[in-house]
Length: 252
Figure 1: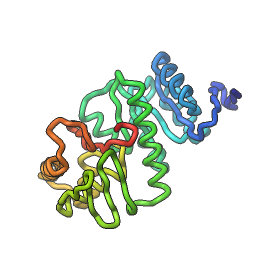
Figure 2: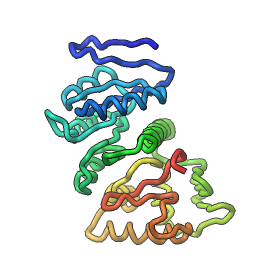
Figure 3: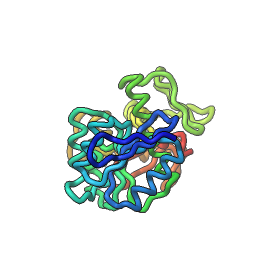
């Protein structure tokens, strides 16, 4: 296994592998950083690391990673600054991995452009599944554009985008136009946490005082029609106080 060294003074190593994806970890705690790095390398990802926000921006600019795993509580600047800077010119997937569990922090990070938000402590398999999901979603988005076509399948759920139909097993689920638009939008971003505001903008094109409640009522109706019981994590997960996430294939 070859090891390449950066031309920069900190000589950050890049472990090369057969996997085409390169992941940048921005995390100041060495134990967590090394743990994530070891697990990613075991899964054949290329990995580069930074321990500050400033160094993370430099590594991002020089190495052009495919995904960023970002802690928010960095010693020099808030990790939210990195999200904001990257999103000025790039759609690279960003997964926040933070001890901050406050809903306000989650919403702010996701609204700034983070693709997902995982709260510490975290499970290794969950992290790897989220990584695969956001990479797949990003790849499909760049390949197919914003208008979905064809079919989407998850477990026994099937969405026919061209016919605007949804099936559970052999049975078609009778959805209103708004309900279909919500579930179709979630499916085109499977694996990614979408904030209430993002879903509302995509479906209704505007936001008002009652928009969140309106979305929640529609989601309740969708779940009931799909045969999902309250609290059951099937097809769509409710990220309380933040938004919704359609499960990815890896989470079935």
